[in-house]
Length: 162
Image 1 (cartoon, rainbow, N blue to C red):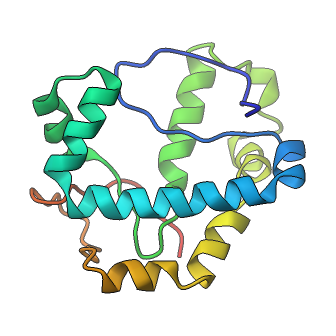
Image 2 (image 1 turned 60 degrees about the vertical axis):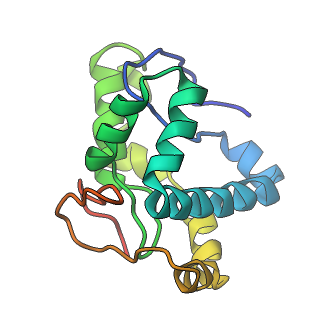
């Protein structure tokens, strides 16, 4: 997939899907499937934090306890599952501030740049498809609190739209 134009190694576990407008226009089915996979993965992580943290630790080479402990600080948007805009903007600003993305790309400012980068179309399709209600019926903890939850992680952080 075409990426935003930067690669970096972080000390955190990051999950970012970025693509060009051309790829999104030419391959909407791929992005729709990724949105479904994302919602299903969030459901699994929230429902089975111990099992999912083992999978993530193995795949990332991280310590299993560290991954599990990090669940209390992760953002799991669910009702509805949307990109965490505030968190993304914070990461984008850090990438610019640290020189990993050229400041000249952020035109005219972060807010306008974000609006050009983020397309909620694919999340909307997942929400309208009824998948979230189906996953809820299967026993997903429909957690909406902003307080950290020790058993399923935390949806804390910046506001999610919806």
